Image (tube, rainbow, N blue to C red; front, side, top):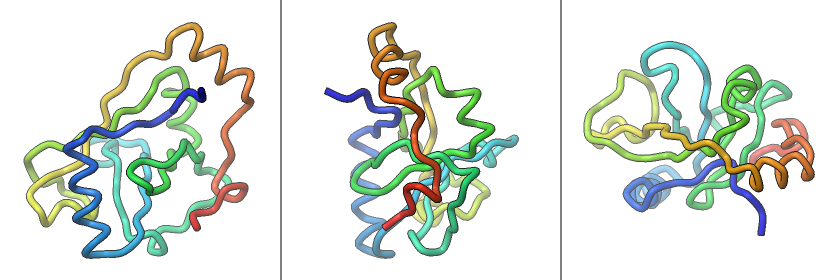
Length: 132
């Protein structure tokens, strides 16, 4: 069994399904910054270009999830949990017009999970794993 670096709540999965129906394939990106700049952003997949400074963490609800390399250094020891809360953020994320926003929660990896991730090696960047 592989250790997931990013997971998603059932409520957020339901929003992703609605957004895929409206916009087609999506892409998530977790950047750094203050305020809504630190929230996970959801975009139509081909409206956001990923590159070498974006780290692919896995798929959530069938959609790829990337994090900025600098942010990954801070959060590498945690599993990111993407949740959904009421309220409209001030960003350009696809869920904003629905009156909700995605929110990143986290938990520390266990010692066993950390060991498994270390053995697996570093995750690929956006050039190594472009959104498909």
